[in-house]
Length: 314
Image 1 (cartoon, rainbow, N blue to C red):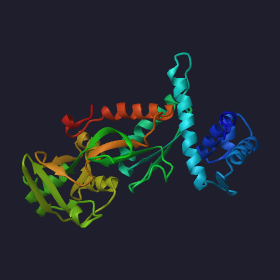
Image 2 (spheres, one colour):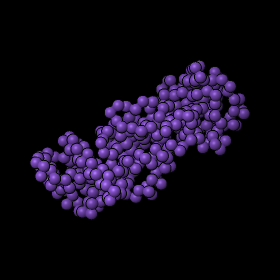
Image 3 (cartoon, rainbow, N blue to C red):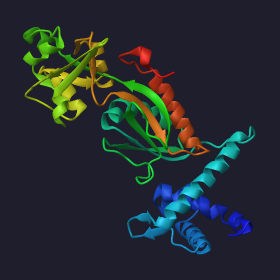
Image 4 (cartoon, rainbow, N blue to C red):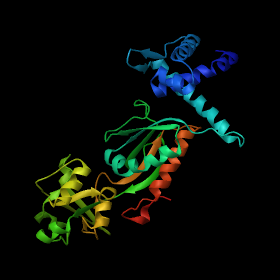
């Protein structure tokens, strides 16, 4: 394709990106102030020029073809570069707009991310958020996700990332439970208590504690295990035992005195501790919609209380 032809098709390429993001000819037409038939003709022109089918169309859904995926990635780079040019000029300002698809672990999304999103939507009325609450591994490219939050000690290679906050865990119980059954003074005392643990894997009932250079692993038991932090929180509040919880889930109950941290002199270690990292594919031009969202989240979560303040990201 010649340079002149490429320039002629710039609008079609930008329209193609919008169709993929919205998954709808009608919604793309609405956003562009056009008609669905005009959008369809733009995609057809691009397909003819490239000599390949970009989209598989059904009555209910649009799906990228294999070549369409490759073209889409190149067109996204083009659109991002164009937006970056406009942003770099003092006399032009592009209002951030578009859809942001973000994958986040269920508990982090519910307790930590969601409370801040209404304010963000009010600040940026042309940005829509699709929050995907998933504990499974999400591939940003294959699953069509713009951003992913993962809890890890070391973010994976091949992605750009920003550490938002440390995710620490603790064990806690109600004052009523501790008054009735006694307060553990040492990790080994937990063997005499009902413990509410994750229960997904056998090792989830082996609680690990660290105090300076000393490490202890204690096999715990209990009549109730649940792989949902909200359920474990509720169970603890109903005096069913000593629960393992992320600090951000238990924080409000701890502040209100409904729960009390158990063994506060010991650091409770789990496989699910680490930093909450915001990850996205490497690109030379971060779209304005992602740039403002990343900055917003970083500022909001930096202000969140943590269990060990010395570990907070700068």
